[in-house]
Length: 198
Image 1 (cartoon, rainbow, N blue to C red):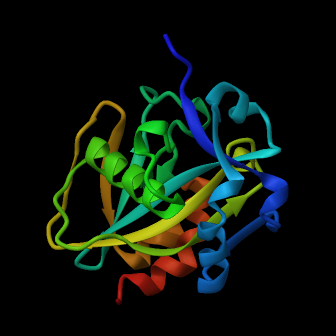
Image 2 (image 1 turned 180 degrees about the vertical axis):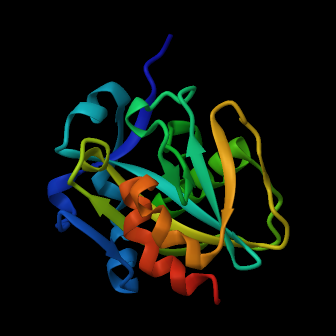
């Protein structure tokens, strides 16, 4: 069986703080314009080598003012996240997603991941809002989130109910859930409090 290949970048090229959410449009544009810096590497190597950042499209789904929270069960492959709540749907970028440039590659991976995890037919595409970095734990130190917000008119269902459970959360409930949230979702809380009113 072939080893999974994932899209990654040398962390030293990104000039990131240890924990931050980047929403500046010029910084995001510069990140997406540097396609030459990115390459596919073997996932087992990338998961253990913090000199690389694996790119993860991470989509927050909002329906009529409520945010989709997904609880990861023990059936998921990433044991470090079992029992945690996520405010984003996402996954790795593989060679099958490759497009004409980095932006299209990320977009195609995002669409594939949404289709794999949710029964969803959005009327509008997700909106790119920022980059999430967190070097304070073993998961975050080898991943970089490319954050999108997707507003939908009806609540999608989870496809793999053995791996994830869906909760719909009102903005005033978010802070109480903080201890259960994975760190990327904790970083997103200030952003999402505003996003539900868009």
